Structures are given as structure tokens and as C-alpha cells.
Image 1 (cartoon, rainbow, N blue to C red):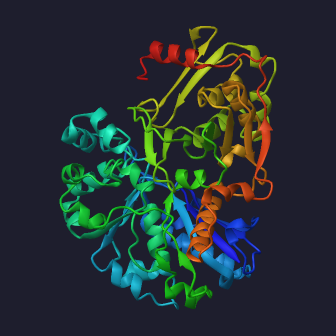
Image 2 (image 1 turned 180 degrees about the vertical axis):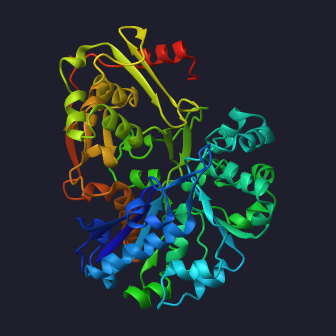
Length: 529
């Protein structure tokens, strides 16, 4: 039997299918392995939407993705699997995740459209022709155009610290609450025509279940609207954001991904031969999904190296701050996820690679690990895009060499090492689990180990996408519990064959950037910490 996980990220839609050969035995007690993977790259596979790195920017601070692009991507992904002979009928459950904070705006007839899809036609054409979306462009996490709305939300509860105490985060421009408020403020007619608002994760679940799916409690934590302590929407924040918002988010509180939304839409049964009994689970955010993919211990630090870089850890004592985030754990009611997000991630590394390593990752790696350069006193901060942590408007690169600020390093190839060091921080952990596209780069992992002074582990099978793999494990868990099996979720990641691999150990004889040198650089250039 197969269990499918989907990950709708900024630049791709990815699928991982996990196989469990359990027969009639307890599926939660069996070893499982990744048996199938497939992906759709938005820029390359769907160029007609005109995206760059999966998004469209207005040239200032607003960043969106056409909502129909994501629908088209699902059509294309499932069509490719069908051409490859994928056994849809063996899939017992589907779960998954998506980029956090993005929002989708459904029109009044959306539910009837989802319930009456014709299997002879693609999804995208039916949703387009019937005007399923009241706002055709979905604001995503890279959008930084909502400072006015952020100030309004913070003022409603007594300031940024008060908001962080309630929701786990101060008001961030990319969070969904400020984005919804901006839609209401700048497009009131479109907001009035909106019957339901989804996160990107619950939007994808809605397509699969053929109805408007609820938001899950972990992804809902990234909206500036959810009370961490009650795990329900905060009425003061809903009122400050936009009128009649609870109805548009769904009258019930957010759900845990441990529940079932029901069986897959008849559309997918008829078009792709899914079993009519295939379960669809609530979808969560990509960072919570990644957490679900790994045997994360309390003293582990998870570093996800993607379009943005994210540092995550689990805790049972939430301590929100202005710079970081606390989210509800996707599975455990008594646990939370601490998180720091850095917007200048893989795209910034690629810019350094293209500028200083002739566009070659192999040369980038040689420069980054050059022993002669590794003992030079250099530190850089690369804010090409507006930065989240620390807050910075973007468009600047700062460099210090031998204690002096310089326009360029000597030699310039030092940028390859400096950009990776600047993206790492020290924390009191015992090991690092690294995921994301850049986790396949040995130079980045080695510098990470050097800067943190900790061993770095990755999934042994680098071809497995951790977020979609986490979705597959969530699907397996929900199916097993629905079948009456007694196993708990926290054992599932450990039973993945060859789960973790020691990728890099710290080299203590290397001089590298530290928190102290970065703090000095922030003070010199007036960067808020």
C-alpha cells in the first residue's frame, strides 16, 4: 500500500509516495521506504504564467503567484504520474504541506464548483471558467507590502510584544492576517465577493477532498490571528484585520493534521483511478511538514535550506520574541515549534555562485572550503531581498575584512565562504539536521558544521524531499489510526530505512564568523538586531 505526501513550495509542486508492505498487520509498526517521487517546476514547466522563481513581483514590495498556476501544477503532476504508470489505486491516504503564509480567496460558488467537477476536463480550466477565485493572484510569503496593516494589528492588542505573546509572533508583513487586511483595504469589492479564505496548504487539501478544507493549527500559527494558548482565532485580531473574517476562515477552530477530512473527491477517482476510500488529511505548512519527516529530538536543531532558510526546534515552553516565531506543533497539543526565518536563502547563494564562481557549484565549493582562505578574518551580510531576521529593507551587501569595512573582499572568491557563514548562527544544540535543496551541497554543510561547532546530519537518500516525505508519514499515521492501529507518530521517522547520515563534522582549527563578529557588523552598519 502507498501513502502520498505533497509539498506545494514556492518554486515547485513535489510528491513523495511511501510504500508499506504490511498486509493486514499494523502499518504503524512497519518499516517503510520512499517508493516514488515526481515534481513540477513552475518556471520551467508552466512558463505561460510568467513567474520568476515561482512568483511575480510588482518591482517594489508586493509579491504574488497566480492561484491557477498551482491548480495547473496539480493537473500536470498527476498527469505525469499517470503516464509513468503510477498505481493510484494503491494509495490509502494523502497528506502534505505548502509554503506558509500565502492565501487563496474563493468566490461564493467555490464549494459548488469543487463538488461538481467533471472528470473529463482538467481542474484548472474548470476553476478558471467558473470564476472559482475572487482574487486571481495569491499574495505569498515574500510579500513585504503590509506594514500599515501590521501596525494596525499590533495596536489592536497593545503592541508587538503583546501580539507575540498571543500569536507567537509580532506582526510580520508576510503573515496572512496583514495580507488579508491589505486585500480588504485595497480591493474591498474583491473581499466582499470572497466567501472563504484558505492558506496555500488548506487550498491544496480542498482541491483533493472536493470541498473547502479547514486550516490546520500549525500552519494557522503563521497568520498573526491564532491564539497559541486557546488554539482558536482571536476575536480582537479578526476584527482588526477585516470584517466577518471568522466566517471566511471557517466557523470552527483550526484542526490537527491527525484527523481525516474524508475521502478523495470523485473527480480524482474517475480521472486517475484513485480508490474511492482514499483518505485526505489536513495539510500543514512546509516547515511543520519537514519537522514531521525527521526523528527530531528536543536537543536537535533543524535547518531547512530552501528559497528561504529556516531554523526550527521543538519545545514545550513557548517563549515568543520580536525576532522569531512560535508555532503550535503539528501533532502534539502540549508542544510548540520555535522558528527563525531568513529570506535571503538559496537565491542569495545562487547569486554569489553566479557572480564569484562562474555559475558553477563545484567552483563555489572549492572557494568556500579553501584552507588558505579559511583562516582569513572576513564576515559578510548579504541582503539582496528584504530580510526578515534581522529586519532589513534589502538591496545591500556588507563586508568586513580584517576589521575594516570593504567594498569587495580580497580575493573576491571569499564571498563563497562568507555568504554561507553569514547564514548560520550558534545555538545550544547537540546536532543539526539539515534539509532542503542546498542540503545536497557538501561545502555548505561543512561550513554549517564549522560555524555551529556541531555535527550535521542529512537524510541518507538526498533524493527524498523532506516536506513531502513528512506529508506521506502524516498520511500513514492518519490511515493507521483510522484502521484502529495503536502506534504513535513519533516512531514513524525512525522506521524509515537509512534515515540519517552524518554529512559533516566540525573542524575546530578553522577561523570563521561568529555571533560576536556578526553583532559587531550589525552595530557598525546600523542593522537592527
